[in-house]
Image 1 (cartoon, one colour):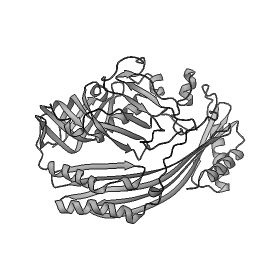
Image 2 (cartoon, rainbow, N blue to C red):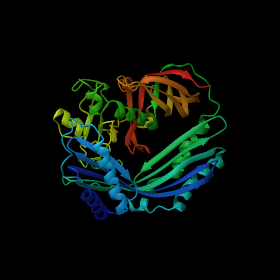
Image 3 (cartoon, helix red, strand yellow):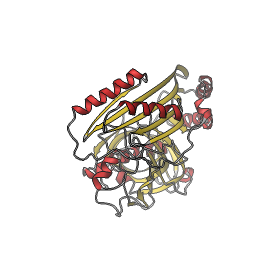
Image 4 (cartoon, rainbow, N blue to C red):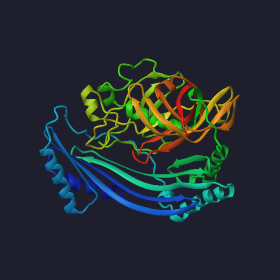
Length: 446
């Protein structure tokens, strides 16, 4: 971790090297460590420290981008020169107006020193709890425990400088028997909040209950979707539907729907990068402060997220949801929430005559973006519900169903929520469990 002063000095050094009309520098630094385990024993422990700068230069309406993880003076100059050379080869973008200017950034405390200083021995101790419990119950443990500290900064030649440090701890595990598996995970900025014993009990309990599953006929079922499955729904809505670019390109169901009912009355979805109960990041990758954006309020469509380009296209301010340039995806909702309900998760099965308990989804893919029609499979704990109780394990299903349609048939929402973070995108989601009617399963695994 370099800290804000050194990062500011570095970004200003890069901007000074650029002779472009406008210049932007994104700095990212991470100290990450991973303890991986399989066959109920640790087999890998790795740590990585990395820093990267990403330079964007603007000449008129031409832009170029280059990046490097070499911060030596020679490498910084070479990166700027590469960005300049790239810009000269680009066609003009008639829609480009300007990089954003400085705005006040909310300070969000998201850095936990205990996580930043978490040791391999501490991770091993937690993993040891899972492995010992697995051996006691006759199952096999696999998974990974990651702890990470990070710092992100954005600066540009118009006076923007935004800096934010944070931490993440994530422990996930799959427990396996000869005929079944169970999954559990936990994410938090503070590694001391990770309860390895509770995670072990959750995953082992699933694996033991899921032994010797039976095949059920595919069809439409009432489903209890655990939080692990619900986060997949929010991921696809963020990717397919809640971006201004998707709306402008007429590939989002939100186009022309503002003020109209698009989901069930109990469904409220929003994005808030400054919330205290997420992996916060109070500004985007253009240094614009992140605004809280409500997508759906009590089932009514309200809005989508914008970056500078999509906002300028409509004469609106950016909501602070840019991704790093060059970016063909448009703005992205990286801190989504779903309003919890009033029903304890343990009581959500009451009144379900026949349904399916789904732990999580796997290998989900887009079939039709406008309908948010998704195909995928259940995994790591799928059970039959009869007369309000889980009665027996069932083989995993293939499903092809509309997540939008599912959110129009929500019967109950759990009072509890869980936090998740995607390693690939860095996006975080806080979601409850859902009880949904009419979820379509199209096949059964063999």
